[in-house]
Length: 189
Image (cartoon, rainbow, N blue to C red; front, side, top):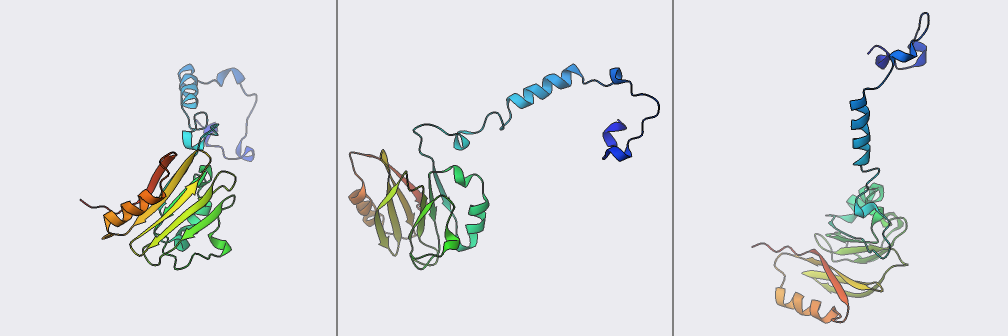
């Protein structure tokens, strides 16, 4: 117990000899340590963190102001595991952007509509490209294409005309291709 309190070797004074046979770990403690290691995240990372052949990882977040949250996104180690990151409520007024909105390793596409609205798509350029934007004061949509699937990032403001939005969505969905529709729909029942 006393040795466990030592913080540096200069604090340790051993008089006479150190009886090495008196230092040992409990077999129960060693068994528990191995069990904990076997179930640890270090040895069993979640699927999001694994390199999986043929996978496409899509992250979807409401960022409630991209300019205010960009440092959080840039410093979040989990973000970089995604191939495509879809953000809603970017609150940006323009589709032009400064370098400070970039995420390393990603291209950025904005579909901006001002305060409380707008979407952004970060994507790895070798995996995806942008095909379509729909800008409406009450909803925004961006279609991202990959070789295998299409992804449509949507932001719907409260009070948007559902029929109009669904009609626009139908226009950009390719019925011969797997399509993921994701985003923030603000539907309150």
